[in-house]
Length: 525
Image (tube, rainbow, N blue to C red):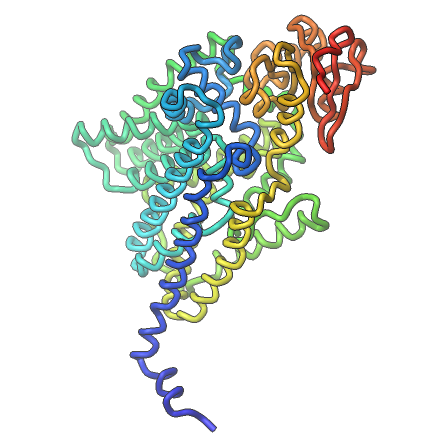
């Protein structure tokens, strides 16, 4: 027997209109919970922040910022000059360390808070980009904006990528802003050209490979000039200014070790495996095609199959959602440059780089390219089907809010920074402060302790030269390294076959400790 009241509610236009607001309320509640979790992160103890969300390589940037704030110049350890970092991020962090007087622990909550503010700004800017695209295509812009905001701020994937201690969040924020700015109609006034020039220069300093974005924009401007048979100076001048602005940093690179590419990039290119890189590229793109579910850890059986399957699902939704399709052909200058930029990143990091473990971070700009397109295509479909929209919001919440809560309150560190929980803790507890530690994985231990020498060459030009000559052991001996704490395969590379002259002094689940013979006093009980 049917209930007339229920039937009336389910069929009346007024009831459907009232129900259409439920997904918006659910999305607002979800983003509110996530905002609370993220903005409460800085209130954790510094040692918890060092395990998650901060990563080992992020501590390289934090160390440089700290030494700059203390007046030691651009150095990784107070001794060795370095260029193995992205400049703008470090320059922005340096005032934080000046504010806390160089205190390592006291700075970490402020660093995480600053990263969270950038993360939030990126989400808002991406939502505005999706809004602009949807409006240009004649679909519901507010719905598209909400979809983009949920994908940017409602997923663990973007939270983690923006809170590593590295520059990725800042890079994505400036990239998204640049795309929006360049998508606007070309303006010829000097103040407009100056603003564009400053934005592109800041983007290049945020991440050096963003020079490819500037080149892509210049290529689009050249094509536009050929098509219209007139030179669009408001496009070309900012590209030239950005190149000139980057010149001082390139000259600094040359002064460090005679190369334009920083040591961080060259150390990652000592060995290149295009096939391994191609696999990592596939997984990285799949990650950004379906960011709702956080990456399945590699130790899980069939992890690769699952991750690729999720990426294929995201691609299928992207291709089929919102039919009939919105009006095609709406690709403005910034969006066109972004698509070219992503293609160049895929080619470069697959064929000319050697760090497949960082591929998803290198390819994070693909997220900026995918989300506005996805949002504009899905907006008409979800707006017309509030129950499906509510189910989608619920799925995002279930897949992400509990995991973020575990990270925040549960002390969950599987896959976190074991360089702090194992390597650094051993060094601080058992290694005499007067003794010198050497390690390839030296970011975290070098941040929390003085007298640490980087040996993988990311931030140490001398070690990189020794690594390229396959004579790292001579460098270790010449620099008086007393203790080596690293992953077992790294220890073999550092000390050579047999580890002549060193004695094993301990181990943890992931690290081994070796001490130079005659310097056994460096290891304390």
